[in-house]
Image (cartoon, rainbow, N blue to C red; front, side, top):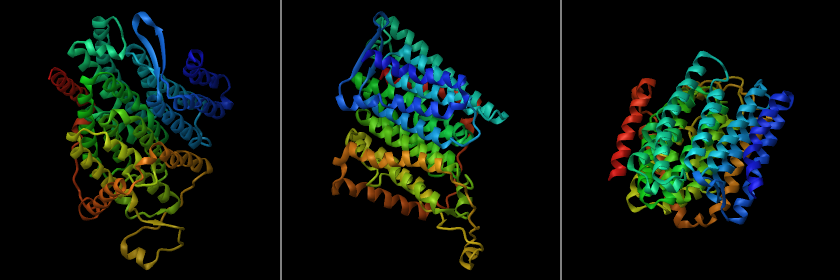
Amino acid sequence: MTVLTLLWIVLPFLVGFIIYILPKCDRILALVGTLASALYVIPLFVQQTPINLQLLDNFGVTLVLDPLAGFFILTNALVTAAVIIYCWHSDRTAFFYAQVLILHGSVNAAFACSDFISLYVALEVISIATFLLIAYPRSDRSIWIGLRYLFVSNVAMLFYLIGAVLVYKANHSFGFIGLRGAPPEAIALIFLGLLAKGGIFVSGLWLPLTHAESESPVSALMSGVVVKAGVLPLVHCALLIEELDPIVRIFGVLTALFGVSFAVFEKDAKRMLAFHTISQLGFILAAPEVGGFYALTHGLVKAALFLIVGKLPSRNLKELQHQPILNQLWIPLVIASFSISGFPLLSGFGAKVLTMKNLQPWQVIGMNIAALGTSISFAKFIFLPHYNHIPHNQTNDQAQSGLKAPLRVELRVEFWIAIAILLGGLFVANAVYYEAYTLENAVKPLATIAIGWVAYWLIFKRATVKFSKLFEDFEHLIGVMSLTLILLFWMVLA
């Protein structure tokens, strides 16, 4: 199994470099590389036995693959495959597909790492590959957004690396378990790096602008899998070291509330999804033992939503309220919105029920408020005006209501295949926690959704609250990171 595991890690990088040699086969090679690496997940779920590989015993460099990591790896495979298919007939070059595959491989490696030094290498490769994808259009704006992301990421990883050195100094090992005997400053520094990398709480303020300005396929990759490379190590630390579990759970609740507080008032569709990525990462951290299933559900939903929003006639939700969209777009948009809201028949329902059942009593109120905010936010999509066909002329009712004639949108077959992979996964994943389907479990999510919809119609649809973007400015992101470090020091010492 050791050879197979190492081959699985190397394969995406190998195929990625082959794409440069055979650029005419870029799409096929990228898809084959992704699907081949996805096959590795099957034994993790079938055998249920963790795979532990000691690569450098003297330094504690280890790989651990278990069902928890399997959920994250499966998410990476499905989202990456969907993005490759979505871009199939675009004019993107072999460079793009090679970087997608290298990103896929580095995210897989990050999910497998159980030590701080190999995780550091994987996260840095992720940063470089993500930067190149963000900057792919090569416009001044895209290059600036990519450099902004890269700078914030590298500063965070500098703090992280200092923490990793302190862990090694204390234990002569880079293993995650070394945090148990590490000094408080080591824990604070490592957590700061992971929080910033994962877009957690105020350290995730780099995320809204980055997602909003990136191309939709890149936003889908970042929200679906890239940010989770910083989340899974936090989950592992919480499960390995009992003393760190409350800290991770606190950040889970704070993150869920922080993200949704912005999302309910946001009028830009991509920024709303970005803030909701922050919020949903909080759900993963709030219940670490079941975070894998929630990560899978969120990754599929959010990737689908970014790809669908990329096809809408506008990102401005106020404009979309007067610009009807075709049912062909509205229906998948509603399915994804239902899932993330926790509606039965989709895996978002089971993931939310399972998460709520594994919360500590002090977390319940905060997470229920976050769930209500999720319902309010996605009511913006669910209640958009829509049509089954494009009329030649506006009717009197349409003219009186101020609705514009819907625009014709070209939806290629590869769009539908990509969406089918992502949304189909939401139906299939119901099998993970089929025990959720009881009347008692269904009542609470449905009531939360109903209350959220009422609140949307009565309050939030017409709300014009605008939050300052001051702390999203480049010059303030590092300052916010410093405040997070102070908070971490206080929590670890307490």
